[in-house]
Image 1 (spheres, helix red, strand yellow):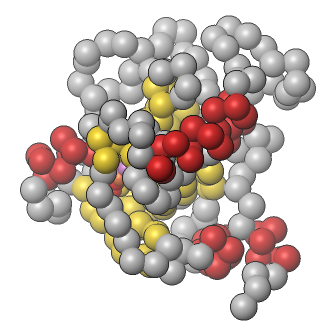
Image 2 (cartoon, rainbow, N blue to C red; image 1 turned 120 degrees about the vertical axis):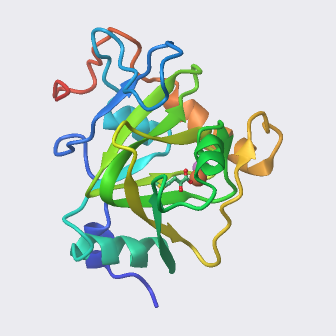
Length: 213
Ligand SMILES: CSCCC(=O)C(=O)O
Ligand SMILES: [Fe+2]
Ligand code: NI
């Protein structure tokens, strides 16, 4: 059945004006992956820039938020399960933690809704910079097919997240470099041009009248 206009509207990702997203360009230190890795001074990455990379973001009021059902319906997220990442709860914890943090992509979207705890999703921009996205309870994020990314717990060592998927899930990470893969080529073709007009460090975009945060 076709998705109604109401559902579609309810499923719209957060906009720049209302977002409480916290994302930043990472420093280059070899410090623990679980530490924030903010630059000094902090260099925020805007939701607008993340959108140009194909990243979608919502802040939801728990599992009962009607937006969640709307997002699932509008985007066809039929599959759902829950993953807990902690030394006690996740089988093969050390190995999983390591593979989550290898730079990789998938042949489908990566969709996560944080139920408890927190962690960082890092995404690559087209200038090879890492953008670190702070995800905590209530945050829902969609990483597009083909984007290079990775995940780490933060120093709290605990996250419980809902995983969503269109149909039967495929979690396989395809580690970088895998530039000739169709999913990667499709990603680059879709987003590289749109990101070409991104913010550069220290520049203030005259196109956006609202100063960030
Ligand atoms: C926040 S969910 C745990 C990490 C994960 O599932 C992934 O990186 O694919
Ligand atoms: Fe993943
Ligand atoms: Ni992934």
